[in-house]
Length: 208
Image (cartoon, rainbow, N blue to C red; front, side):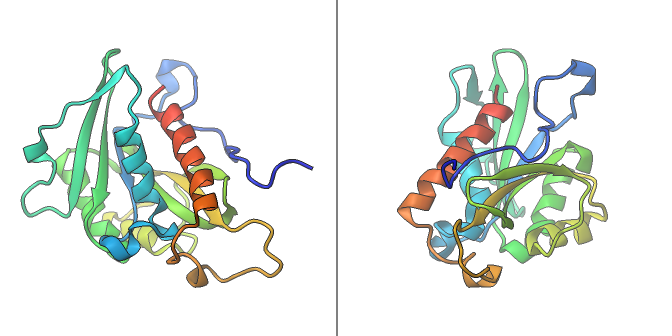
Protein backbone atom coordinates (compact mmCIF):
# COMPACT_ATOMS: atom_id res chain seq x y z
CA UNK A 1 0.00 0.00 0.00
CA UNK A 2 1.31 3.43 -0.91
CA UNK A 3 1.53 6.48 1.36
CA UNK A 4 -1.79 8.16 2.27
CA UNK A 5 -0.68 11.43 0.70
CA UNK A 6 0.25 11.58 -2.96
CA UNK A 7 0.25 14.57 -5.27
CA UNK A 8 -0.92 13.07 -8.55
CA UNK A 9 -2.32 15.12 -11.44
CA UNK A 10 -5.72 13.56 -12.08
CA UNK A 11 -5.98 15.06 -15.58
CA UNK A 12 -3.24 16.20 -17.99
CA UNK A 13 -1.90 19.64 -17.21
CA UNK A 14 -2.57 22.36 -19.79
CA UNK A 15 0.88 23.61 -18.81
CA UNK A 16 2.69 20.35 -19.58
CA UNK A 17 5.27 20.07 -22.32
CA UNK A 18 3.67 20.00 -25.77
CA UNK A 19 4.15 21.74 -29.11
CA UNK A 20 4.10 25.51 -28.68
CA UNK A 21 1.17 25.90 -31.08
CA UNK A 22 -1.08 23.85 -28.78
CA UNK A 23 -0.31 25.73 -25.55
CA UNK A 24 -3.27 27.49 -23.99
CA UNK A 25 -2.59 31.20 -23.69
CA UNK A 26 -2.94 31.36 -19.91
CA UNK A 27 -1.87 34.80 -18.71
CA UNK A 28 -3.71 35.36 -15.41
CA UNK A 29 -3.67 33.03 -12.39
CA UNK A 30 -6.15 33.93 -9.63
CA UNK A 31 -6.31 32.10 -6.29
CA UNK A 32 -9.59 32.09 -4.37
CA UNK A 33 -10.21 32.43 -0.64
CA UNK A 34 -11.57 34.68 2.07
CA UNK A 35 -9.83 37.85 3.33
CA UNK A 36 -8.84 38.43 6.93
CA UNK A 37 -6.70 36.76 9.57
CA UNK A 38 -9.54 34.49 10.72
CA UNK A 39 -9.58 32.72 7.35
CA UNK A 40 -5.96 32.95 6.26
CA UNK A 41 -4.89 29.51 7.45
CA UNK A 42 -8.08 27.59 6.62
CA UNK A 43 -8.56 24.84 4.04
CA UNK A 44 -10.96 27.02 2.04
CA UNK A 45 -8.08 29.46 1.41
CA UNK A 46 -5.90 26.94 -0.41
CA UNK A 47 -6.17 29.00 -3.62
CA UNK A 48 -4.88 32.17 -1.97
CA UNK A 49 -2.15 30.19 -0.24
CA UNK A 50 -0.99 28.68 -3.52
CA UNK A 51 -0.58 32.12 -5.09
CA UNK A 52 1.38 33.37 -2.07
CA UNK A 53 3.61 30.29 -2.21
CA UNK A 54 4.41 30.79 -5.89
CA UNK A 55 5.12 34.49 -5.37
CA UNK A 56 7.47 33.76 -2.46
CA UNK A 57 9.33 30.84 -4.09
CA UNK A 58 10.15 32.05 -7.59
CA UNK A 59 12.72 29.99 -9.54
CA UNK A 60 15.92 31.84 -10.42
CA UNK A 61 14.78 32.32 -14.04
CA UNK A 62 11.74 34.32 -12.89
CA UNK A 63 11.40 37.70 -11.22
CA UNK A 64 8.63 39.95 -9.98
CA UNK A 65 8.38 43.03 -12.18
CA UNK A 66 5.39 44.80 -10.63
CA UNK A 67 5.84 48.24 -9.13
CA UNK A 68 4.67 47.76 -5.49
CA UNK A 69 2.61 50.94 -5.82
CA UNK A 70 0.51 49.38 -8.59
CA UNK A 71 -0.19 46.02 -6.96
CA UNK A 72 -3.63 47.08 -5.76
CA UNK A 73 -5.41 49.05 -8.50
CA UNK A 74 -7.54 51.93 -7.25
CA UNK A 75 -11.22 51.03 -6.84
CA UNK A 76 -10.52 47.39 -7.73
CA UNK A 77 -11.08 44.30 -5.61
CA UNK A 78 -7.87 42.39 -6.24
CA UNK A 79 -4.12 42.60 -5.76
CA UNK A 80 -1.63 41.36 -8.34
CA UNK A 81 2.00 40.62 -9.11
CA UNK A 82 3.48 40.55 -12.61
CA UNK A 83 6.16 37.92 -13.22
CA UNK A 84 8.61 37.68 -16.08
CA UNK A 85 11.04 34.96 -17.13
CA UNK A 86 14.42 35.32 -18.83
CA UNK A 87 12.94 33.36 -21.74
CA UNK A 88 10.46 36.17 -22.41
CA UNK A 89 7.45 34.44 -20.83
CA UNK A 90 5.24 36.38 -18.44
CA UNK A 91 2.35 35.73 -16.03
CA UNK A 92 0.14 37.68 -13.67
CA UNK A 93 -0.67 36.32 -10.21
CA UNK A 94 -3.72 37.77 -8.46
CA UNK A 95 -5.74 37.45 -5.27
CA UNK A 96 -9.26 38.81 -4.72
CA UNK A 97 -9.84 41.05 -1.69
CA UNK A 98 -13.51 40.05 -1.47
CA UNK A 99 -15.11 37.06 0.22
CA UNK A 100 -15.31 33.77 -1.63
CA UNK A 101 -18.93 34.13 -2.76
CA UNK A 102 -18.06 37.49 -4.37
CA UNK A 103 -15.08 36.14 -6.33
CA UNK A 104 -16.77 36.85 -9.66
CA UNK A 105 -16.60 40.61 -9.08
CA UNK A 106 -12.83 40.52 -8.60
CA UNK A 107 -12.23 38.14 -11.51
CA UNK A 108 -14.36 40.24 -13.85
CA UNK A 109 -12.48 43.39 -12.82
CA UNK A 110 -9.11 41.68 -13.34
CA UNK A 111 -10.01 40.41 -16.81
CA UNK A 112 -11.09 43.90 -17.84
CA UNK A 113 -8.11 45.59 -16.17
CA UNK A 114 -5.60 43.40 -18.03
CA UNK A 115 -7.72 43.18 -21.23
CA UNK A 116 -7.83 39.38 -21.15
CA UNK A 117 -10.42 36.78 -22.13
CA UNK A 118 -11.75 34.03 -19.84
CA UNK A 119 -9.77 31.51 -21.90
CA UNK A 120 -6.58 33.23 -20.69
CA UNK A 121 -7.58 32.72 -17.05
CA UNK A 122 -6.75 29.96 -14.59
CA UNK A 123 -8.55 29.93 -11.24
CA UNK A 124 -6.89 28.12 -8.32
CA UNK A 125 -9.19 26.86 -5.57
CA UNK A 126 -9.85 24.21 -2.94
CA UNK A 127 -11.86 21.11 -3.83
CA UNK A 128 -13.54 19.20 -1.02
CA UNK A 129 -14.21 16.21 -3.29
CA UNK A 130 -10.50 15.58 -3.88
CA UNK A 131 -8.37 13.98 -1.17
CA UNK A 132 -5.67 16.04 0.44
CA UNK A 133 -2.54 15.67 -1.68
CA UNK A 134 -4.39 15.26 -4.97
CA UNK A 135 -4.95 17.95 -7.56
CA UNK A 136 -6.71 18.30 -10.87
CA UNK A 137 -6.69 20.57 -13.90
CA UNK A 138 -9.97 21.23 -15.69
CA UNK A 139 -11.51 23.47 -18.32
CA UNK A 140 -15.09 24.63 -18.92
CA UNK A 141 -16.65 22.68 -16.10
CA UNK A 142 -19.62 23.53 -13.90
CA UNK A 143 -19.06 24.88 -10.39
CA UNK A 144 -19.60 21.56 -8.62
CA UNK A 145 -21.12 23.47 -5.71
CA UNK A 146 -18.07 25.68 -5.14
CA UNK A 147 -19.48 29.12 -4.37
CA UNK A 148 -16.42 31.02 -5.57
CA UNK A 149 -16.52 29.28 -8.94
CA UNK A 150 -20.30 29.74 -9.16
CA UNK A 151 -19.83 33.46 -8.57
CA UNK A 152 -17.24 33.67 -11.34
CA UNK A 153 -19.39 31.78 -13.85
CA UNK A 154 -22.44 33.90 -13.02
CA UNK A 155 -20.52 37.19 -13.23
CA UNK A 156 -18.45 36.68 -16.38
CA UNK A 157 -21.17 34.65 -18.09
CA UNK A 158 -19.11 31.58 -19.02
CA UNK A 159 -17.34 28.57 -17.55
CA UNK A 160 -14.77 28.55 -20.36
CA UNK A 161 -11.73 29.11 -18.18
CA UNK A 162 -9.06 26.84 -16.69
CA UNK A 163 -9.05 25.64 -13.10
CA UNK A 164 -6.48 24.10 -10.79
CA UNK A 165 -8.32 22.23 -8.06
CA UNK A 166 -6.50 21.51 -4.80
CA UNK A 167 -7.66 18.51 -2.78
CA UNK A 168 -8.44 19.29 0.85
CA UNK A 169 -10.57 16.33 1.98
CA UNK A 170 -8.95 14.56 4.94
CA UNK A 171 -7.71 11.07 4.08
CA UNK A 172 -8.75 7.94 5.92
CA UNK A 173 -12.17 9.27 6.91
CA UNK A 174 -14.39 6.64 8.51
CA UNK A 175 -17.49 8.59 7.55
CA UNK A 176 -17.63 11.22 4.83
CA UNK A 177 -17.69 14.67 6.40
CA UNK A 178 -19.75 17.43 4.86
CA UNK A 179 -17.54 20.12 3.28
CA UNK A 180 -19.01 22.91 5.40
CA UNK A 181 -17.88 21.05 8.51
CA UNK A 182 -14.17 21.33 7.75
CA UNK A 183 -13.38 23.86 4.98
CA UNK A 184 -13.21 26.77 7.44
CA UNK A 185 -11.14 24.91 10.02
CA UNK A 186 -7.49 25.77 10.60
CA UNK A 187 -5.09 23.58 8.63
CA UNK A 188 -3.14 21.16 10.82
CA UNK A 189 0.65 21.20 10.63
CA UNK A 190 0.71 17.74 9.03
CA UNK A 191 -1.83 18.74 6.40
CA UNK A 192 0.00 22.02 5.74
CA UNK A 193 3.10 20.07 4.71
CA UNK A 194 1.03 18.07 2.23
CA UNK A 195 -0.58 21.22 0.80
CA UNK A 196 2.78 22.93 0.42
CA UNK A 197 3.94 19.97 -1.66
CA UNK A 198 0.92 20.53 -3.89
CA UNK A 199 1.73 24.25 -4.17
CA UNK A 200 5.33 23.39 -5.03
CA UNK A 201 4.31 20.97 -7.78
CA UNK A 202 1.88 23.51 -9.22
CA UNK A 203 4.62 26.15 -9.19
CA UNK A 204 6.96 23.78 -11.05
CA UNK A 205 4.34 23.18 -13.74
CA UNK A 206 3.51 26.86 -13.98
CA UNK A 207 7.01 28.33 -13.97
CA UNK A 208 9.04 25.60 -15.67
